[in-house]
Length: 305
Ligand code: SF4
Ligand code: ZN
Ligand code: ZN
Image 1 (tube, helix red, strand yellow):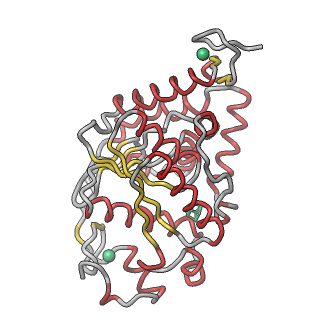
Image 2 (cartoon, rainbow, N blue to C red):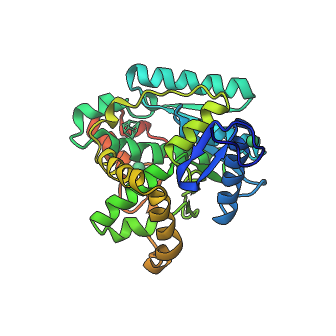
């Protein structure tokens, strides 16, 4: 039987790659301390910042919101209702229950009112759903945060997400994407600062934190997640992790600490979209182009136009 490294009680968690075991109480303590260390290491934000947490109803985002709340940061949640059938309904309910239980403020943004649901857009857009869904979430998250005076957007990206993205960017030697892969993206030209305080935690560690903290999260995956190439990359990395615990953390953190700075900082020139005014690299932003394509909302009713 493994014993908690801190108090000697029976351990409920054994973290192979850290070679450490914890009881419930000390796992939560360890997790919170590590979140705080990550925030400080990358100078993500301070107690004076007004945070908006991107909430999906899953283990990562709810664990993040819970940790920020316990660490006394000022953090409200934003749930973007993507309109993906039962999955979205269940997720929204989980977010509402979570916020109600803790007396936290949850904003809900309905994608259908802004443009259309993800399944509706999928009918006219050939690309995989995740590619335009990601763009839409980033666009509305940023716009909402800026309009409501939030200084930082926090997302629940975990080590599995980040190492899989890194793996994919290395496979294609996508220097531009590699340069942007960092736990903090500073504010610029209409873009609110974005941070990822959970980059050092695996999916499993977040699930453990959620479970041991009594968080009711949605276990079901989005139906569009199936077949995404990131799943294959995650599988490969998990096989390596199984053989050599600590591989994911080393792969990602060594890139961040030793390699990222060598890539240099290339300033991307942004300008306001001629239709909606949101920052973009081209004349018309990708969301306005998508709106035109889906033709589900007239351009004249666009905000700021
Ligand atoms: Fe959107 Fe893809 Fe995530 Fe589903 S899996 S919520 S489609 S990004
Ligand atoms: Zn203990
Ligand atoms: Zn636009």
